[in-house]
Length: 303
Image 1 (cartoon, helix red, strand yellow):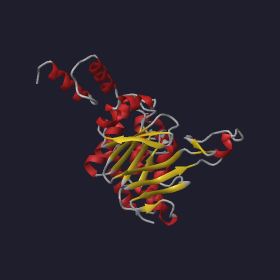
Image 2: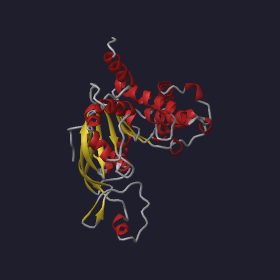
Image 3: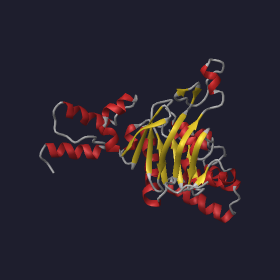
């Protein structure tokens, strides 16, 4: 089965982790990554989920812990398959096993802890690992590794043992390993969660550049609201289903919905929301620092 209206399409997707039904009655301890809503004696991590991501888009998926975000990430490249419904990647159904490796090549996954993805004894060996597995010729492998290291700004660490790197540098290695595979899409599942602000900024700069300059589709799953300012669209997820979809300004203008889901506004948006509540004439959903400074200068009568 094929579908063409979007690069990644979720068509009425539900997913139930093994043992979830028994867990409801207390017979099985819940150790699944996330659990979602319940209904008719069943417990789903995602339920009746419909959304799409177009080729070349930068899309953020937001939701509190347990909302289904990581399950969605794993469904995107067939690490798990839907219990009900269909997930399509570039028109191909992930349930069609003959397309499995092509789907995983197209959709590269970068997880929260880079130590779980880094296995080699040097940076360049780790970036080359996936290429070796799919039988890329040596000359092409060297070219791809060199390019991935360059793009991710870690050329000088190519001979370094990964355990000697900082968290942000390790995450760059993980991104480089994905990039060397020449994916059409990169999914970052809470990939900046363990990083300090400097590390978060460096990883976001890389993926934003890949999106804007190389047209790589980026799907960012995060709980850092400020990371969403430059994306094209946001999906708000709660109990495994889409609550709201829109641009960052549309999402964060709806303060009640965001806060009602247990999330926060980006710091700049929260500041200007409070100014607005005090009667200051400022726009809705001021997201970035630069935009905030511009608004304040205009209020002060300065260009």
